[in-house]
Length: 238
Image 1 (cartoon, helix red, strand yellow):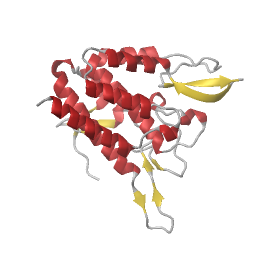
Image 2 (cartoon, one colour):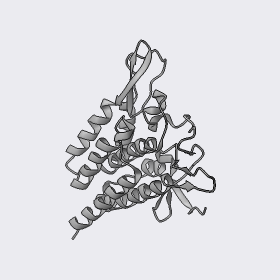
Image 3 (cartoon, helix red, strand yellow):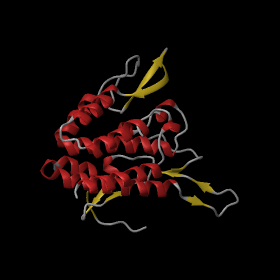
Image 4 (cartoon, helix red, strand yellow):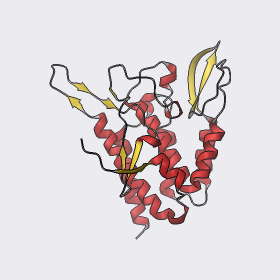
């Protein structure tokens, strides 16, 4: 496997630059590169090892987050860090970056490729936030997500994109954190949020950041959606 030389990672890019100067160009870049990431993730999820009598299918990344997305010198986005990757049907590690982890990692349900989709949805939401409000907006969002889970006796707070429901000190279910929903709504209402970004936010909130794994779209479907977004954005420029 050959990797391009990386200049930074997506987290580093967000921290040191703001998109406000060339918003239209940055939106085109965001759509194109997110489509590329989704396509690469789809290829990863569709991997098959068929040397044995029982083919192994379904690879998952396991730790999707901005710092695991490299930014090359030509600003191409590339997946990185496969230390927690695993084959579905096996026993994927649950020790993943807590902020971007899917609800099933805390509910002791099976971790599948759909878990990658949740994490990818978190990253895309932050990407749109950065496009419209820059690194300061990202920092504010992170701070406002930090809170203790009501009903929990655990002595710490977290900044996950979901909250757990407790019954008699046991986790029974999860739901998307209210702060996340509020920010998505606020971004849609932003005067600089063009239709294609609104479509992106709808995709994230309706088909990626959903608690039930079976209700999340596949990486291939996400790639197809972004291909349509790219085409839609190009039409507005002509």
